[in-house]
Length: 119
Image 1: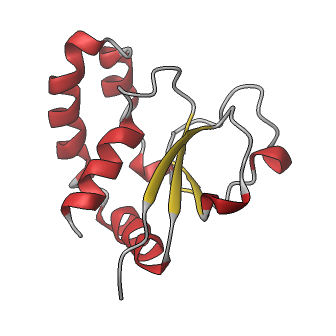
Image 2: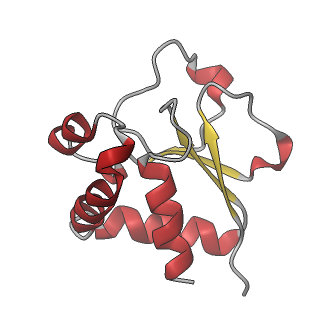
Image 3: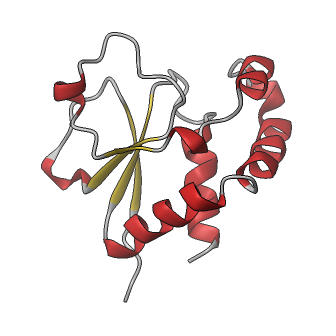
């Protein structure tokens, strides 16, 4: 069975019919987003970076390389949630939903890379 594709989308962008399974990968619900409007299929809080890592990073692009390394280390302790995400990915398209303003430097970008590496 072929893997589905992985998309990234901010929680503040409208859901689309072609998003596939929409998975929120943040530890906190996005501020100002109504649950019924977000159309989230699964909220995998366990895959969010720790509070300490998130606060240290602060979406500073200068810390991006180190953030990726530390976050991948944290993900090693989230095997159940990673397996669940991989199962969704095997079943078809998934959209990793995140709240960060920076669309290039956030945990969803790292998760997508990790998933694709495991294909």
